[in-house]
Amino acid sequence: MTLMTPQKAGETIGVSPALIYRWCKEQRLPHYRCGTEGKRGKILIDPKDLEVFLQQCRVEPHGLLDDLE
Image 1 (cartoon, rainbow, N blue to C red):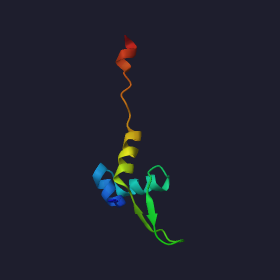
Image 2: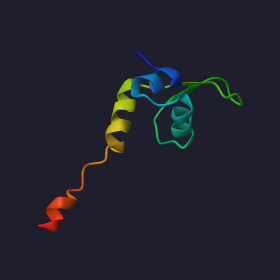
Image 3: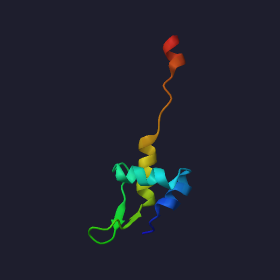
Image 4: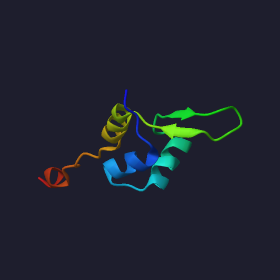
């Protein structure tokens, strides 16, 4: 299994590492936190989880022109 750092995940989808960290903190983006108890540890993200997360963020067009007909 190949895991990504928040920096690499951000580069992959074109957002800042700070946004990746925020999504992890908000528990919106599944991640692994490796380290000892009481320490921050290292955050690692599975590319599959990142892909699923992005799909959940997708906004479909509404079709406002269809409503006018």
